[in-house]
Length: 188
Image 1 (cartoon, rainbow, N blue to C red):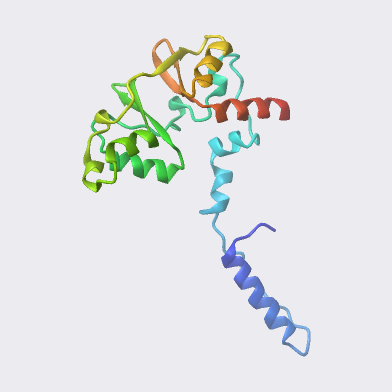
Image 2 (cartoon, rainbow, N blue to C red):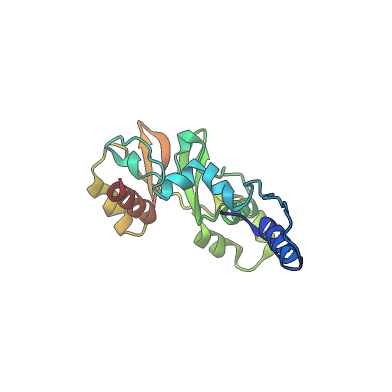
């Protein structure tokens, strides 16, 4: 049985009660977990795909390497006029280190933790600067039909690849995404 601390506490109390009895008794307790914490991962298709537990149909192009697809609503993004504080909050909330910056559905930049460090420099007030002042505007974009060698060349330079379909943003690909995709291919 997979259960959390609430269920564990109730089960422990029931067992302790039973052990303290001199005659056998029938005892009922509850498994009160709702799936809203650690079990919520099983309801998250993106997490399940990243773990190789469910598969997305392969397209045979670079979009197969995208872990969090924008057209599925899975990409966490920023707008140029968002504050650095808002971006930092999203990074912490979603446990990510970079976000694409979108304007009218197009990628106009990428902002990462290093951009925040360089622009905030310990001054809390600088968290209210707009993303447009901190983002990297040099974005490496590949069409989804580009060869994997072009993706590898971008990743070799320590950059993140933006994958597009006729200039329509599909998602980001990181080194970790490539490794996960390769691992999941082996597992299938």
